[in-house]
Image (cartoon, rainbow over all chains, first blue to last red; front, side, top):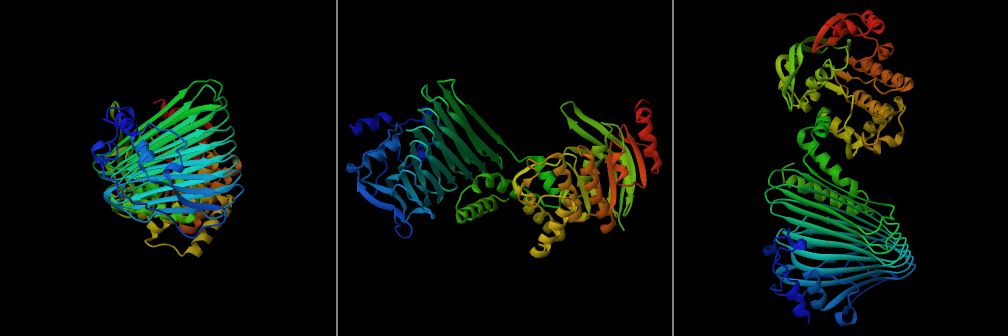
Length: 363
Length: 250
């Protein structure tokens, strides 16, 4: 069964969902030719805290709660041996984030990793997933946000330049809940992330933001899908990217689907790309499908451009040299999103990372 | 004592229809402590003069010279002109999202002085400059010019003038879009900078209103890309009365 399904789904590169992705750089994650290694790298940082349960459970005991037609996600769901569970109990308020990281790695084979994060009714928490080091990683993260709960979810992709990472972050939002995610992708040879959202109760709010910075030879792809299937939910998407160097390629797809039942939907998505050099390419495709006119609002915007000469002139006219002016503009461009991450240490680290990316490309 | 010397300046701008000549030989000398008002109708090239001196890439100098104390300003990059002591208060200051006013000012003053100012004294300087211009203390954490009202943008320009301490300042229609109270506050800032730094001022304006607050030593009438008449403050009174009709009809 699963073999047939996988074969059926194996992408050829002609599919809409795969047409931007260089399949030959996926290390065989998409067609099953990669060798799986029995690595379980995801690890909880620090001590277990009251109200938070982390454990690994055999895959037979934890069925996936959402379907996907993505070949890699389907394979992860079928083949990952166990599921890393983060369960935050109801009525829990965590002052410090739950921090997960990849403790081991390597490009000797593919790790397939399933993760389930759930937060109970009326709880408030942050979960951070840090991906660094080297890896070939296929990953499916399911996130269940309970009624009235508030979850902040931050993922960092700071991989080495030989790493391959394909993942889905799928959130299901119950009534009156809030899900705020920030996705940061700066490392990796090929990173292809699917931040997706569905709603299971009204009155909920999904805010998806992200920053990415691609340098020479990197392919960084983010495919957002927000499925407004029920009434009175709200979503906001804001992703910003910078590119510099030969063959730097970013892809941003923003699919928002408003089904006929989703009256009172309020959605807006935005993607901005800053091209810092020749030879880089940013693809940006916002896409809105609307089956009902009874909505509050639905919109999207996408821009890709070079430095604004007027901004640089203004800064330089105050004595700031060109390099420094460019650095300020790029930092400012990303700060809009990074400054909204609640954890200040993460903020500082990310701005530091942006600085080092800029230094690397000679700005 | 500094001298900005503009001789036979010719400037064109590139458009879809090719290069268009805007400045047709401008001669002007501004010394420390002097205030020169350049007045003229819209479209006469006043702003082009300001932006050309500051080095905006949109404009191409096709003839003439600009020197500051003998140094060739036209050979300098934009930031080098600022370091040499020139300052342009812009009519339409540019928004720089995500860059706070405090970060911007600290970066600018560090570049101009060659090393970072002592934090405590610098914070004090900024506070004093903001107070003097009736600015809200929260202002310094906002992004540069983003969402500023017209008045806030102009106050922010003059705050920079006071903090960055140039030798010669060009004020491009600093009075536009200001109500009477804001005009007075901004003008007082310019007058403080004149006294504190023996500043030379090139004040570009369409209206005589600002000249009630910032007294010019010289008035130049600008039309069709060059200076067509020069005189003392009394020339501004004449313009107030008769307008620019006699200069543009010819």
